[in-house]
Image: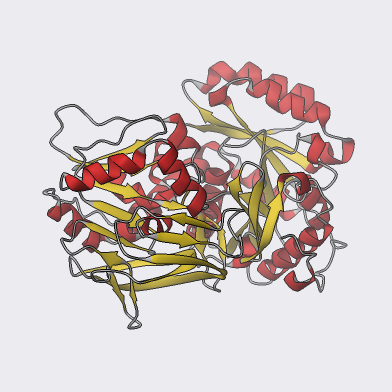
Length: 508
């Protein structure tokens, strides 16, 4: 079955966007396409149709294929919850915590499960576009690799290597990868792509020639800087950290401030707000004081609720939040941010880390208890303050009780979630994706004195994917890529195994 793996010379070289674009391109050509990423590391995740979770970039690629996201599309997901550990998600389900010292351990069992997921996907489509992680040239990780060449060899899929010219040294990156890879890994690479090019590509003709002569790999094309990529959700928090933004002085737009927590999760929640002309969305970084003139302050989701609440205290934001509330400010907590608003958070089983309890911000009366069972589901209902319809998803550990005031959301299944203060200025719930709901976003902005453009966020993303696919049709040698993918699968590729998540050795 045709398949192609896109690997890169490093992280953030644009692999995810290229895979999404190729998925949409092939889908638009009439193929039944599925995305696949054997291993990912990200705190941005999406709920799958089968009740699991995968990296949000892979879920976007599923959208590019016009199919629902499935757990098999990203069978191994690492969600960092400290500098030395990450929650391990296997085939959509949390199985424990992987410490950094275990990162290089024997991963044959995880590889078997990844192959199992890949085979299941292959049975329902006629094309798979696979995305690598990091770089295959990280030879210190090669022995137990399942994210790049280790997986590519296991299922006999050909590779195209991507270099990012925007960050410079792209010739050295590609030629250097060729130099450090062993012969078998080099032979698996069938071509290269130059990504994020600005200017006249004729000026880089000599560079392309140098890469070809030094590596023997043919060029599949030069992809220009893609403005449409900015309309897609980012894979990780790197863009937030690299692009500081301050409120525009004298702006008549409403100011919405989001706390940039160390382990911020699913921050693409705020993309629809960022795209509203009437909104000045700013991220508050460590060391900055909270803007007391903000029209709305948001505490976002977090992978490590207790640790990030302790961080809020350590940088003085707790005092700022209380001062902001006393001045009449409006505060919204989403998922972990909602749990932080309460009176206490307890983690008796040390699921998130060693600290078992922490006092909350005491802005609502809820108490959260962390539990092993993770809530993963799509939801729809009504936001009770505005009466607006919402759609979104829940993805959280912990159950909340003792909410003072009234709930924030009434779900269509008859259940409720969240809490709203008596004066309506403090609210929170577990629902991600609130602002993608056009009706709710418009109602919220109206309550802040602004008018929404009422753009359909989903339609905007689909339009960006089509724009990217059209550009890739123009600049890439698509027929060569299809020939490479169509000739890459051998008849003796390994068959699916009978491995299962329950057979994994305990991690923690």
